[in-house]
Image 1 (cartoon, rainbow, N blue to C red):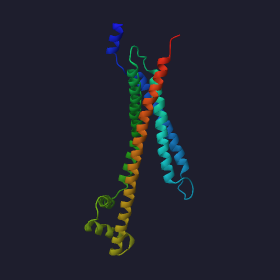
Image 2 (cartoon, one colour):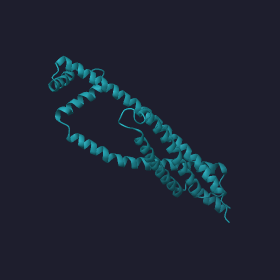
Image 3 (cartoon, rainbow, N blue to C red):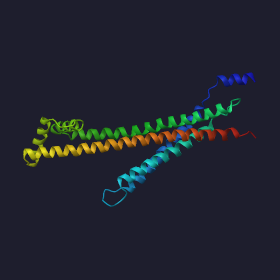
Image 4 (cartoon, rainbow, N blue to C red):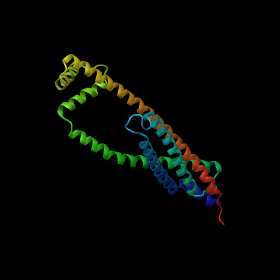
Length: 238
């Protein structure tokens, strides 16, 4: 009995093989379900008016699907980790419950890192290609114009020198008078500020919903691991 207690005291309470297996299952299910949701979303929208679902509807459905994805993938990964982990002997029930919960949480954490790494590695080449294409198509005047507009989005008012420069560009390309060109510049920058503010609010709401979905996923993985652990402990040798 002393040897058993001593072995338990010096042995790790984490079954990393079960955690890694559950994490890869959770990551794979997440990618599969995200691909399925993206396919449904793209098939539901259309560039033509009055055809397909609205952007607002697709966005709300995407948030719901993200939460469902986290629930299914995290719960499956946590459950498998609970069923596959080592059966602990001479350990108090409360300690077993804590270890199972920790196994589920570790599955969620490792699976999240794996999924995020895969998505980032897939997105970076596309972003780099788009940036390179944009750089090759950009002229000196457009670079300066982009810089002026970007600065205007962060300021309450456009400096007079910048406004005059933009108005001269507009006037030279459209044939408008200087006063009309300045009014058009002010209107365009105002619309750009409205679009930027709308994008900011949308991004903020999206990040909050992602945070909630990930929190739900962590809970589901931890709880499912306790279910799998209880079923694992009921298994008896025959």
